Length: 347
Image (cartoon, rainbow, N blue to C red):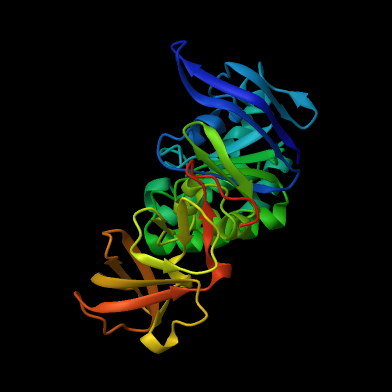
């Protein structure tokens, strides 16, 4: 296990295109830190720089008490799990797990013990003599994780390891990765574009945008107090409603001046004319679409100003397209942002 530190790390391609713009970050020993953001934000590049698969243009990366800027990947004491599994098709599961250890001249009895322990932990003992083509996607991903575990590295690096799995398997593997990371207590950096995956896995989240950090914090901190409108709309599904105060189409009372009003769909309540008292925000909505997701429904509509708005209702909604409704929110559920998209202090 080891702490990972990034100090003003930058990456520039062709001398002009800067993809990582001065990232500084402390990743605690044993922490599971998730890098999340849209495609092209720099999260995979940053992970590959930690791994040594990409050189850094400037700054400093430390793993444990060593600066690793000039060290080869094999010298950094890390293990990486990729989205494409990267298993040797002609080898059995056992041989795949043993391959890296043999290359390091690890004693045979140590190899045997580590593989047995990893296979038991991952519940793949019955697959040790099979080839990768005989395994399902979830089983292959367990083998890929096992190959990392037997190394007993200082840190695990995960590069979107679940993106090739179907929705059900992704949920199962999320639980498995969280359980394993807790059991092994190994420092882990995990990259994903899936904000649900990020929210459920992370001890802390790092939201990246255009090569720089928008916000760092626990999942609940980023959900409840997003630092910018970018974070507000990226964390949470459906994303936070952002209403332009200047365009209007809604009524406010007791809410300080702000360029943008933020309200999450789950914090809007459907109200009747006699129920609006006591709410800080009220808006009339024309329903455009209703999305049933099981125990609840999400309703998408427009305000009189043409601004889009979404809200949640419980159960199997009978709301029809074209319906006119009134929604409201309490002041403690309203987020305020300035004209530049930054959260207003105290809100």
